[in-house]
Image (cartoon, rainbow, N blue to C red; front, top):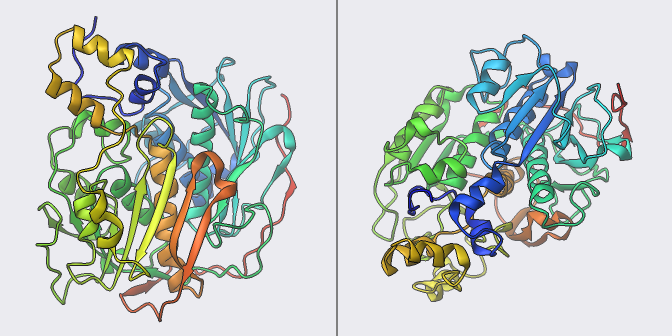
Length: 472
């Protein structure tokens, strides 16, 4: 028997198997995750393409937190990291820092992913082509021999593709979606309700990027916001002001869900860890280490846009109280049936934040305490209070947070670059083809912007045959 787990040490993906009854204990749930692994094949583009590198780094960072057997990368060259996500080091070092490892031989017992024109070994296991173009990203089964152009794309598209890949790999290992490895899965950030595989001539280049933001909550979603913002091609990052609002410390449980949390950071304030990471990449940060609520008042000189990633109904109900000009809020499902669900709200809207969330204050979902894993903890000596606290924690996976964060940052990019504004986006990472949206009207973006480093031209996206996916 292992040590009794508590809310601070709980692996939030292991909780999925505890809550659905598949695992009789936290230890058994961890043993399940310890059997999940992935091989990533990279092509020669990885040495010269920022987008290919950012896709790789995002896939490693999201996948290794749930695939505890390991994430191997085959074909890594001795090349510098060009991605703004990991500046000033070799690409191999960046992969290793994020928890992956370069290998000379692929594990034949693991499914695999392909980034670029890689030469791969034959396999009967699932293999996904990680692909993107324009405002679209996702995965296509390698056997379909199709891909998007992967030439002109906004910075978020390859990161979205990587998160979709991590989602499919986990679903395959978990055995909870029969089509995992047999279907295409992706999303258009320009029009989330559209087919991501089809060309959309209305897509715009991203010539302008947001410059002044207030980030509320620095857990799974907040750290994903930071990761995505760091991927954007700012001409001058020193002109970007970010207020980081969180009062909590990093715990071991955060390491299982949050992209910037590592075991070395346990016990340190989330705001300070995230601030250092962002400052190392050239951003200016300001810390607000108080619990967010209606008592927070935005000063006139502070950012007028808030990005919210908290799971607290009291905080959400107060989102419009401080006086922000625009709020973009992301919420994730928490139970074993809903942990892949995503909802995005923007304010001002047809309903206020208080109307939406005030009725949820104090409400809780169905408790999983009757499941065998919790009964085993009770038998081993956990008291009713500890059991209730543990049961109340949500199931969490990093790839869902990244997809949600892509939708949040894309909302800013669309409004800045001539696209539509959305009041609501709702869907599930398990079924991205069924995302629903509600449009809204908005005036010109008046909350601060900077030029992109190299604004791209007209974006095109057509399916083309994939090259390189042949048995060696």
